[in-house]
Structures are given as C-alpha cells and as structure tokens.
Image 1 (tube, rainbow, N blue to C red):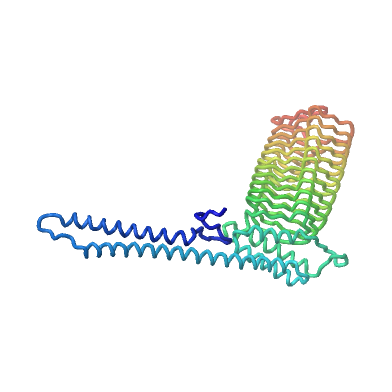
Image 2: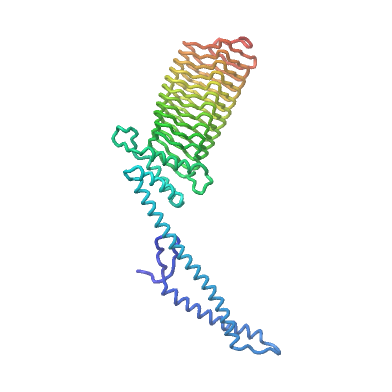
Length: 473
C-alpha cells in the first residue's frame, strides 16, 4: 500500500530534489501562513500596546497594528520568494545536469561505436573522442581510460601477410599510447590520468612512447604483454603503486627504462622471457621499492643497468635462468640497495658488473648454479657492503674480479664448490675489508691472484687456497 505522506521517489538524474507531494504541501503552507499572520497581528498589537502604555501616550490604533503586520508579512514574503527562487534554481540545475549526463552518455556511445569501425580513420577519430570525453567527464574518467586500454588488449596482427591484419591499425594503437602518455606527464593537471589504473594485460607492443610518464598510486598492468618493437619508458617515474610486467615476452626491438626513477612501490618482471632485443635501465636511480625479475629466462638479447645508482630498495633475480643473454651493470653504484641473483642458473651468456662501485648494500649470488658463461666484476671498487657467493656451484665458465680494489666491505665465497672454469683476481688490490673462502672446495679449474697486492689491513680467509703473503705481488 502506498503511503500518501511519503516523499516522492528520487527521480533519475543528478541533483534532483526529493520533494513532498503538492496536495500535501499547499494546505500545510496555507495553514502556516494563517497561523503566522494571526500570531503576528496579536503579537504586534500587544507590543504596540505595551509601548503606548504610560502617561501622556496615545493608545495604539488598529491601523498601526495592521500596517506593522503587513510590513512584517511583506518581509517574510520576500524571504519565501527568495527561497522559492533558490528552489527553482536547484530544479533548473538538476535539469541541466541531466541534460549534460545524457549528452555525455551519447558521446560515449558514439566514440565506442567509432572504435569498432572497420575504417582506421574512423577508429582514430573514436580514440580522440574517447580521450576528450575522459577529460570532460571526471566521474567516468576511469571507464573511458579502461576502454582505451581494452582497445590495446584486442588481438593485433603485425604481419601484413597474416590473416587478421588491418591496414592503419598500428597508427591507431600508437595514437592511443601517445594520448595515454600525454595524460601521465603532470600529476597536478586537472585532467591527469596519474593514479588511474591502466590494464594492458596480454597486449602486443610493436612500438610506443611512454617516456616521461609518472606511474604513482595505482596499478599498471603489462602482464603477459609482447614487446617486439621500440617501446620507450625513458625518464619515467615509478614512485608508488604496482607496475606489472610479469610473464611478458621481450623477443625483439628495444624497450627503454633509461634515466628512470624507481623510488617506491613495486615493478614486477617475474616470469618474463628475454629472448631477443634490448631492454635498457641505464642511468636509472633505484632509491626505494622493489624491482623483481624472479623466475625470468634470459636466453637472448641484452638487459642493461649500466651507470645506474642503487641506493636503497631491492632488485631481485631469484631463480632466474641465464642461458644466452647479456645482463650488464657496468659502472653502476651500489650504496644501499640489495641485488639478489641467488638460486639462479647460468648456463651461458654474460652478467657484467665491471667498473662498478660497491659502497653499501648487498649483492647476493647465494646457491648460484654456474656451468657456463661469464660473470664479471673487473675493475670494480669494493669499499663497503657485501657481495655473497655462499654455497654456489661453479662447474665451468669464468668469474672475473681482475683489477678490482678491495678496501672495505665483504666478499664471501663460503662453501663454494668450484670444479671447473676460472676464478680470477689478477691485478687486484686488497687494502681492507674481508674476503672469505672458508668451507669452499676447489677440485678443478683455475683460481688466480696473479699480480695482486694484499695489504696487511686486509682480512682474507683463504680456506683451501694457498695464501698470498701480505704486501707481496
């Protein structure tokens, strides 16, 4: 049963006042006006009568009472008229907002239809229309961004000779990427997309420019994506949130994170495959957060961290497989971060830390299985921190510390199983710090300290190795 005293249900649309029925409000308003008039009349009469009481004062007249009452009622009427005007303004604004919402919905529908058109030029127009709509419609901005990201997740054939290839599709996709990048440049802009979730899961990137973008406070998903062209994240900032590249494939081309800043949050490359091309982190700054390559496969191509600065946070290569790639950290500075390659397998390729500075933090190679390839620290400076090869196995390949300087910190080879290959400290200088070979076994291969200088202040636990006398070449 309908309650006659219940307010009307809220109408569709925004900013619609929740009003009582007119038949109920009108009599109530008349009754209130009548009571107010009666009260004002008698109240005014009593007030004027009390003021006129006294010696030499004239009694108050009915005309004075009526005049005063009418004046007060006029003022009340003016106030009520203002309230009515305000209410009417609210209704007009509600109507206007409903019209705006209808128009925005129509624009969304039109842009979505254009994105599904057969002709590339029409799809391109739909991309710009959806991006403009996202700027004009803050309440549904995430929805518009999701549509553009979903477009990049659609199946995409890059080879003209293959079925499903569409002419002009690459330009449409590059335009989507450019628009997303332009909205990630300044987090302070009113129309920024920084802090919005971006989902590119499984997308194919044969090009694209995200350089200078700010990824902060949101989830950005590139999981399972395919990178086969030139994609740039150069100079980007990863300061918070979660950026996921896990399970991605880097099979060719070039992906650049050079000169980027990783100051918080998490960037995840776990389980990715690097089978070709180049991935650059050169000149980047790692001052917080975590970058993980755990469980990844490096079977080809090159990954560069050269001249980067690791002052805090963690870089993780746990359980990775290196069978052919080159991973380069040359010229980097390690003053506080933790870099962990423990439990990984090296059956080929090269990992190069040459000319790096180790002043703090930890670089871990514990339980490493090294059967081939090259691991180089040549020309590096060890003045602090720790490099740990504890419980690792070397059955081939080469580990190179030639021409390095050990003045502080600790380099640990405890319980190292060395059965083949070459471990060289030739031409190195040991003036301080600690090098530990305790519990290690050397059943083959070559360990060389040729031309090294061992200072009296250096602490070296030689284990099964013949000690090099202090201050002797």
